[in-house]
Image (cartoon, rainbow, N blue to C red; front, side, top):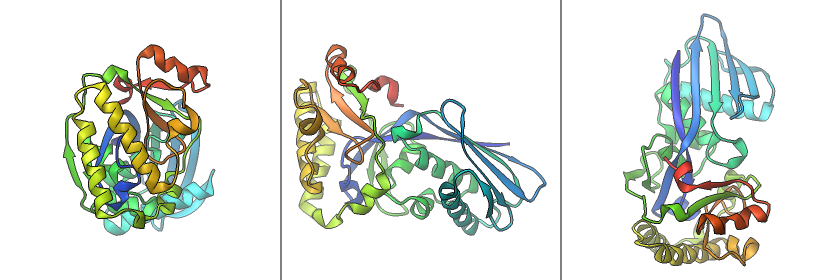
Length: 298
């Protein structure tokens, strides 16, 4: 049996702007996804994917030699997977010579937006011994920061450069870490749609440099007051790029701390600052999934 593992991800800075080459601070999550491959002598590839509660949510069967789809529980997911597997086979002809069983197991909820797709791509790339960034573009597209997080051991600075991005391991464990919390907005955001609708022309060199400066400043913030000022400035900057109001203005104007969007605006997780007591605000508003930074981040 071959076994592979990749971490989930969160993008702390330069959402959208990272697509145009801005420097981004990204962090791998403690939870991720496993992929196990058990080869056999048959001509069939069986695929089974389980969620964080060990419930089967997707299955498919392919003819190994052609990777032609034979049966599935979800044709849309299966055809995309077929495309990814075929590209991996094209990149490495020794990949998938025989059939077998593939079992994928998620550790986080699919709707959370922590990288069910990117962890899958990373695992398949490890298994097939191919470039994960090339595989990502075939399967889902995007900046690639999530692929960099999948195998990272801690926070990274990421700069897009297609197949060979610039990835640097950095320290980000501020003294105020216990005042950082992640809140799920009770809705899944389609990051692929967000990527496709973002107009790269809204970004110029000056805008990218401003994002770079904010990323560096946020990473080395000395106290929570400085951090709050910086993330609020970051929210206003990105809001202008995408013509949207920051999430605090739209949903939580009376919250006492600061709030920052993460990844595609309008869903998944946000970052909020404050004491454990002040964070109860979100639960009272109906946002029950509140995860301290220490528990979420690798």
